[in-house]
Image 1 (cartoon, rainbow, N blue to C red):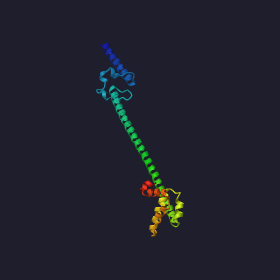
Image 2: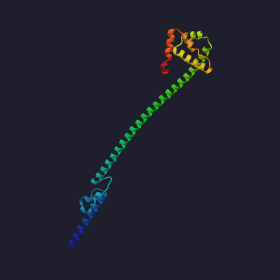
Image 3: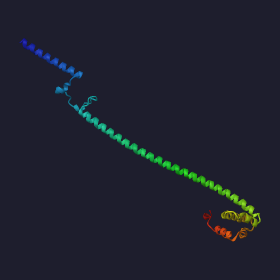
Length: 199
């Protein structure tokens, strides 16, 4: 009877020693006791979230998360490219606008200079017309013989205006008769042209 008890105690001791050894090895990480002993396995293995050693469920979740992140990154990249394209278009349009503004400024400056030149010319024509009116017509025509036709026309028109302002008779019709017939005909023809065609 004592031998049976001793054998039973020995078996119990061996069992507890074996369980203790399995527990220690499981805690140290040498073996995974739950893999061999079913009742040690968790009831819901899908809840395991071991970052260093993820299970299959976690791997699938991580993969889906990575795919979503990659999809968002691609969307952001596309938006960034669209914004860059829009920015380039805006920059190109701004460059064109600046070029147009510059051309307008150049044309405005040219018009300003042209207006100044016309004003200066008008003053010069007025001075010359005033001097010619005080000369003998024959001397005046002799002086104007080598002028351009349109310069002669401008001076004659200015003389007519000065005569009108001063209330004196116009002498330009008489002066025209002092030119040669050919030159007189050409000057008269050009005087009838519209102002645009006189340049």
